Image (cartoon, rainbow, N blue to C red):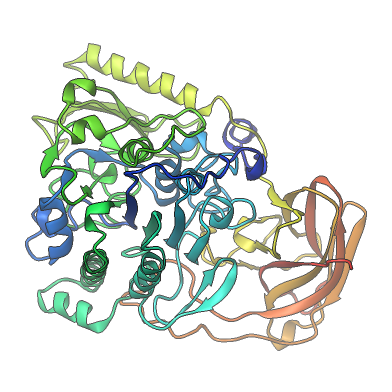
Length: 591
């Protein structure tokens, strides 16, 4: 049962202001010495998933060379999970300020009032493109096209179901692809770079590998199987080597176009490894607030402009935005208050201008659960499952010895700092996670099952309600499925239910209703397909992929303001309605 206190404290920001009211205004007058930027982010690739970090059986020569010829941040921190890291990277703010708090069920969505790197670069005359996994909101106005990226190829969910010749999205429209997904995204990014080679550009490439499902071409998988790895690790390392090959392609294209000396290239990852494997002896993996869950690679290249050096001071994802603003000589943008710092003094050797600081991590989406950590240059304070621990990271990098009882003053100081930080980043929570619809410029809207609420015996197919999950076990007429929405202006939609249903369960009468309006339909066509073939190397934990039928439920008029769109069954035939994937809202435009 949902805790009322949790609802009050935790649900954040989702009724943010329309982005146009808060975005920086475009300025096509460029200052000189404004370099291009290529920002590469990988998904679930840990600190130890690179050859340069001591993984002797993994081949990543291009990324290793990138580290060797530029800036290496030795203590670079992110959030424990995907969407929170992305929100902080894009905004320069701890994710709890941005409306993002988890990885699914709408909790990955970022407040549209946040000012992103895309908007900052776009407002100052740059061409902007995003190629890969967005994971900070699929609905207008949280979509990348409304968050500063004029070109978007990829997907907005937390993961994708098929990595081979799949259908992605191009600026809101389905986009059929040919080839392996990381190769496809690289190809699209390179096309963007070539198209804009004579203009300043910001190219954000958030690859989705090596996140599961674990799919990778044979040539990569077979190589690591022959080295004795199990199927999962062979797939992960194969995906990492494929990423490395594509990083090499990007560098080669910049060299071919003679853009190396005018392009900043950043490589980083979004959290610790997605499983137990080599990670430099650190404690923790993805999802953990220990060192191994949040310490990741970060390398910066700018040929001839920044030195080759390793930086030991702690830094993190929140620092990328202010650092790029400085390195690119941008006019100071109007943003919400930043948590990050400009790292350029460290990059150029002025450590005196960069005093020591604390870095904070949060494990759980629940604000009322205190689990989290404070990291200083020397210590890591951890609150986990009711235990409070302190580790000397300089003398005990593997976190084997809790010294909290021996150093109570330091423990108390870091714990107090953590408590003050939590109070600060959560003070602006807003108790509403409604989906925003009914905008003039909005395209058709999709309300997925994984963002719904439901009652009775209905449950998720897989269980977690991650992206692509659907609803099953609808067996009672008293049960319902619903989506909370906030409507910008009165809008009329035609509704399509995405469903599957075996022949024996045909006949369910369905109604969709909201304030003052309803639509009806009956499931009369059986559709019970098999799962699509999946080239997974191991059995996935996510749902598999299958096609869905569409049922036209007629027209629904929604009024301005907050309301709930509710799906009910007035009659159920033979014990069950069928399975529900989501509800499409196709806007009816009056002439």
